[in-house]
Image (tube, rainbow, N blue to C red):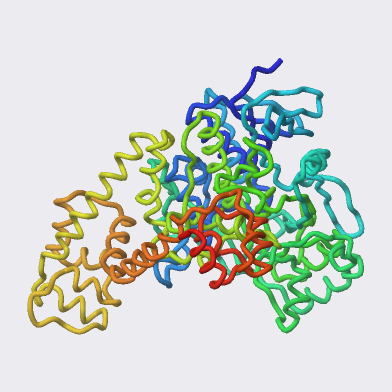
Length: 623
């Protein structure tokens, strides 16, 4: 029935799709097993990609040769660059997507990859021999042999859906849960736990009065996620802002006695930064309103997503409270919000490659590792897919460091610190965030991906051309001066001091009030520099401005990277028994034995390992 595959990917969500695509493009034969061929890369929750730090992750996936950015560009209905009023380290792209088109585009891509085969079924067991993967067993009774397996089960492992007093099995509303695999993995010694997430009501847009809400349009010149030649967005759909009120809160409170969260039926830990509306009312009882984002689900559908109104209260209470919100007085809903509990496996059981420590050639990626969000899942998927291929082909493992990427920060956080709530990426988690900007992901990562055979020659050449153009332009801006007569009118308009003698363009760009695109528009010399070296996009001009304006800060971060690099290069043996190092604190010995860090740098980031413990380890290595 089945041939032996290099890699089996279980689950076709965001993690599974990226894993299958990466492994196949690298040359492995892949079988993608999914419970539903109709729901590949489904946007189970909000119809959007990107956002704070998440947008950087999507661009990093694209830079590596993944598809999340390409699919987003092909299915987006609105684009916004968030945090433009802050420094460039905080700028984050975000797109509203057509939810159905997003899934359709992903399926088309996967079906275009000749190395990917598909099978609709449920995996109930992984099969191993001598602690090494040999294949999987499915609900239909098939055994499929493989050299490696990547599990990306999302919220389906023993998933339970809660709506008020009703609870039933499911991985998503209308889809059954995956039963048996958790128990199978636990029989091999894996530890599992429960987490919880939720989603809001979906509303019929024909019953919403948008005239009573604040319109939120996309950027005037919409950007893109992919560094490839994806289509530009020529028209956009608006989102809207609405607000809850004390009346809404009081209506919701009438159902609290039926809340599965407050009555203790939900045992899993929910996301701190995306709580349900009932949780927000309890935790922030001093607030008399909460902001809601009303988001369209696609180009043609009338379905809307009420971002910020996630709930597991009884459906009638959800609807009653919704109709108390201005603009929703006559609202009809397509389906209620619900909470879902599911099994996950604490990620300290993984290596940096996302291979499990217990069973060789078995990889975990996505929500199975305790993360939340499409972007976090997809990034783990591409890394797991790459490393599964590298492993079965006898090639070097592919690891991204904290100073390389947000993906590196994510994976290091997961395997070093573990999770006690659904993990979500923020810019604040990255200590080198000025280096890890959304505009330079291709410069940081594409060549590394090209060197292992994933990113194409065309992509790599494009990055080389980009860096050459930027270097030439920056060099010119540092050496060409402007006359006072040419620039003083602009400087006065920007409320910055006039110049009295010729001044280098780069020195003018250093002023906080001066904007390089504006300078190009008012200065003939600056415009000529751009045109002579080559026509560049607005985004590239912004990148050049960042490199000039923030050169000192960027240099300091690079120095910090070099300073701490020595600790990342001090390798610890994975079979080291820390209980024998009596100079370490008891907690450090316990944590170090559990996590088995690969380097002194990773050991230093483990909660409970003190600087004095690191000194002990450094002395030990010296001996």
